[in-house]
Image 1: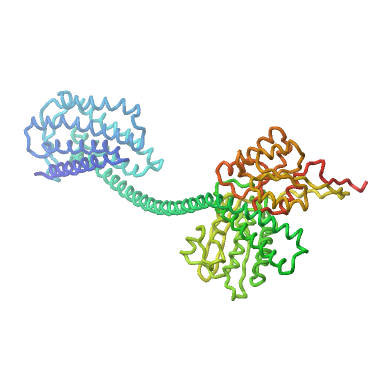
Image 2 (image 1 turned 180 degrees about the vertical axis):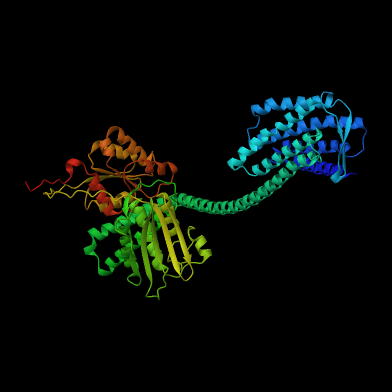
Length: 632
C-alpha cells in the first residue's frame, strides 16, 4: 500500500473512532451537541475511505469515478455537520441561516452522488515524484469545481461563528477556529492541484482529519473539566449532606426537647391548678396571720410563720417554673425596650442575697444598650444565668468572677454571662437544656432553669446557647433584637393628693376555702364581696357596685371567660376592671383565652403587692386620688 493510501486509511480509522466515541458521549446529559460532531467525524471517515482507490490501485477506473461522486456527498455532509455543530456550541440552534443552507448542501451532495453533472467519467494520472505518490484522479466538470467551492466556502459560516465565540471568550473556540481555517487552506490546495495549477500532494485527508482531531482535543478537555466540576460538586454535596445531617440532628433534638416541654406544660398545668388552689389558701392565711395576728405570736411563732411563708414561696416558684417550662417558643410575648444593664444589676442583687460576696460580679454592659423583650421574662432569664454562673464556681474558691457584658451587632444585641468556674464536659453541654437534667446535688436544683430560660428567650424571638470547656468556665450567650431607648416620661407636676376611699373587690371563685381565706386577708385593706361561681358573680354585680373583680379562670358554667364576655355586653367599663386569677390554665381553650384577652392575670398564690398595684391601676377614674398644682 502506498504512503498516500496509508494516510487515507489512518485518517479514516481515527475519524471513525472519534465518531463512535462522540456518539456515545452525546447520550450523556449536557453533551447532546456532540451528535452533530459525530456526524462530521463520520463524514470524514467516509471521505477518507472513498479516497483510497484514488491513492492505490484497488479498484478499476469506474470504481474511482463512483468513489469520487460519493466524496462530493461526503464533503457536503461534512459541511452540514459543522454548520449544525457550530450553531449549537457558539451560535443559535435552529438559526434561519442553517434552515436555508442545509437543504442547499444536501441537494448539491445528492446531485454529485447520483448524477454525471460533476463527475461524467474517465480518470487521469497525477504523479508527485518526491514522495512517489501516484493519484488516479476522476475527471470533473466546471460544475464540480463550483460545487466544491460552494461546499468549502460555506465552511466560512462556522468559522465566523467560532471567531465570534473566541472574541466572547467561549472555551476552546479558538482551537476549532484555527483547525477549520487550516482545512480551508488544504482543501484549496487540492482543488488547485486537481486542476493542474501546480504540482503537490493531495492534503484533503489530513485537512478533514485536523478539525476532527482538534475537536477531539476539545472534547477531552471538556470531559476533564466536567470531571473536575463533578468531583467538586460531589465534595460540595458531601459537605452539604453532612451539614444538613447535623442540622437535622439538631432540629430533631430541638423537636424532642419541644415535645418534652409541651408534654411537661400540659402535665404542669393540671398539677399547678390542683396545687395552687390549696397553696393559695395556705398562703392567704399566712399573709393574714403576718399582718393581723403578728403581735399575738411568740417569737418562735413569728419565726415559724416566716419559715412557712418562705416555704410557700418556694412551692409557688417551683410550680411557676413548671408552667414556664411548658411555654412553647412560638408563644408570643409582649415586647418593649428593655435596658440590659439595669437587668444585670437586678440579677446581681438576687445573687448577693443568695450567695453573699464570695464571687466578684462585674457588670460591663454599656448603659445605653436596649433590647426588644418582655422585661419580666428577660429578667427571669438573666437572673437564672447569673445564679447558675455563681453556682458553677466551687465554694472553696475566693477569686471566682462572673461578668455580664453586651455588644451590638447590627440589629441584634449579644448578651454574655461568663464565669471562670468548673466548666462542663461535651456530654453535659449536650444535655444541659433537657428538662430535669442537672449536675447539682440532690435538692439544690430542679433541672428546669436552663430549659425554661431557653424557651423564654425563644418566645422573645432570640436564641440562647452555652459555650463551655472543663476547667475554663462557661459562657451563656443570648442573642436578641436591638431596640431604641424608650422615651423619657415627663416629670409629675407636684400637687396636693386627696386620699382615695378603699376599693370594693368582688372575688369570684368556686373554691370555698380560697374565697374564705382571701376574704379574711383582703378585708384588712379593701371592701370584699364573695361569689361562688359565674352565675352568682353576675347576679352580685347587678345588685351591688364593685370597683374591681377578681375572677378565677377555671370554673364550671363557662368559667372566667363567660363572666368576662357577659360583662362586655352589659357593663363594658366593669369588664375593663377584671383581674383574672389562675392556678394553672389546664385546657387549650383557657390558655388561648388568656393570651387573647387584654386584662391582667395573677397566678395563685396571690402576690399582694402585685394585686394592690393592679387594683389601684384599675380603680375607677372618679375615685382615684387626684392632684392639683399648688404653684400658680
